Structure formats: C-alpha cells, structure tokens
Amino acid sequence: MKNKIKLFENKGIRAIWDEEREEWYFSVVDVIGVLTDSINPTDYLKKLRKRDALLGEYLGTICPQVEMPTETGKIRKTLAANAKDLFRIIQSIPSPKAEPFKLWLAKVGSERIDETVDPELSIDRAIANYRRLGYSENWINQRIKSIEVRKALTDEWDKSGVRQGDEYAQLTDQVI
Image (cartoon, rainbow, N blue to C red; front, side):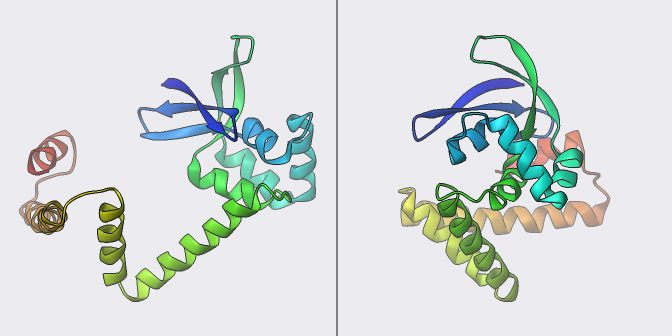
C-alpha cells in the first residue's frame, strides 16, 4: 500500500492505495473535516453515526481501519472508505460543501439507470469522455473496435474452458 495526500480546497485528505483490491481508500475523518469545517471531525463523525443509525451500521461493516500517517508523521489506524462507500457517507453530511457531491452523484446515478434501459448511451458516454480527454477520432474508433474484439475473444476463451486467473489476465493484457 502506498500513502498519498489528496487536496480538496487546499486541505489534505489522507489516502492509501490498496494493491490487492486495486482501489484508493480515503480517511473518513479527513473528508468530514474538509466538508464540514468542523474543529473536531472525529466528534462530528460520532454524532453523524448516532443521527443516521443505518450509516453507523454501514461504517462498522464496510470501512476498514487502515494505517495512515498523522500530521506529526506517526502511523495510526484510521477509518477509511473507498470511493463508493465515501459517497454513501457524503450523502449523510448536511453541509453546503457536500451539496456539489450530492448533485453529481444524483446525475451519475440517473445516467447509469438510463444506460441500463439503453446500453448505447454508455458507448456514447465513453466516446464523449475520450473526446474530452483529447483523443483523436481515429484513436477513439480503434479503441471501440478493440474493446469489441477483446470481448469476442474472451467470450471464446470462456467457451473453450480457459479459466480466469493469472494466465487469463496475461492473455487479456496482451490483447489490449
């Protein structure tokens, strides 16, 4: 695991990369401190857990204690959440700073629901994102085609009994 400080409005949020799960974990107390401007974000979290009993249960089951450095450099265990679980926590914070996150979550959730009804929308979204990132039309077309080819190939491997694991991962890495 590697540690990193993420900045939000010039305030630090401790984060750690979990190699095994391949995802970032963020300090819950740091996020609460940034979004609430609380002098004591740990107490704010305790009150939040009491006010929202479901959140309290949720935090106890899905948010691990991970070691992160404190401001003084000491390594201490702190409650951490991945991005998905962090969004659930943010939903319970009654703060004007949390509102942009909540609005964005509602928009993304609505878009994903629309995509389950019309899957072509997800392809359109991918193309729009590639354009926004500055990729050429030729690159985008090749990328979409390579995704299609990779999917067909991995479907054939599945039918042939190639098991997912290290070899499967190595083969699919070669296709990309």
